[in-house]
Amino acid sequence: MSGVFSNARGKPVLDAMTDAIAREKAYLSDIDGKIGDGDHGVNMHKGFSKFAAAAEGKDMSLSEGLNELGNILLSEIGGSMGPIYGTIFMGMGETCDGAQEIDAPLFLAMMEKARDELYDIVEARPGDKTLVDVLAPAIDAFSAAAGDSTFAEALSAMTAAAERGRDSTKDMIAKYGRARPLGERSRGVIDAGAASCCLLLSAMASAMSQIMRGKNHDFK
Image 1 (cartoon, rainbow, N blue to C red):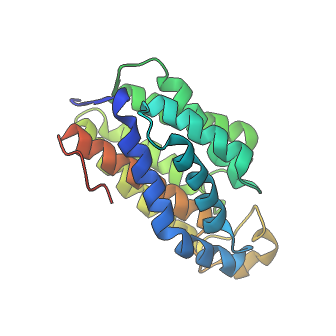
Image 2: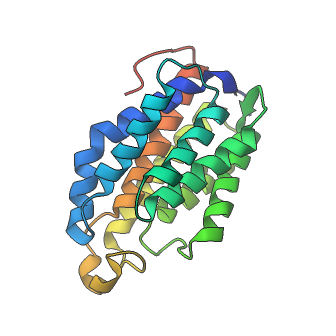
């Protein structure tokens, strides 16, 4: 596999993720409100906005930014999403800390670390109508593509799998969270955590790919 991402170029990637949450905060809260408490987009936007304020005017490596973002989400967002996303991003950041370049094997290690640390704090697994239904297949797709594709192509495969995972939650019954008591009535709605996870992975992949291809702007 060819292609490497400079760890030092992390700020545009983090900006793209922040912009994606800001752009879709109403949608995330809307779908959350159908089977949950309706504040997912608001809470995610709150955490990412705090990160954006802390990072304003600073050059950040991807590892530094992911660790800072994870720490803020862990400490500033209420409910379950703060610890979940905080664990995911800090796991990724810690794995690439100190690296000058991030290649496909290192990125895969980052994603696998995030998944493994998440599994340490949640019982949800694929099929339970959570963001795990996005994260797990996204990792599998990236890993499968890593052998004979470029880094950017593997990121594209990851994004496609994340989208399929997000959409698959629509027909699932919620087994965790506020939607669990609804049982069969939780069918027919995409899980809000799955939607935000897909949004963030897609924004990260798109920004990284554009930077590797020599494009420095317009990550939206």
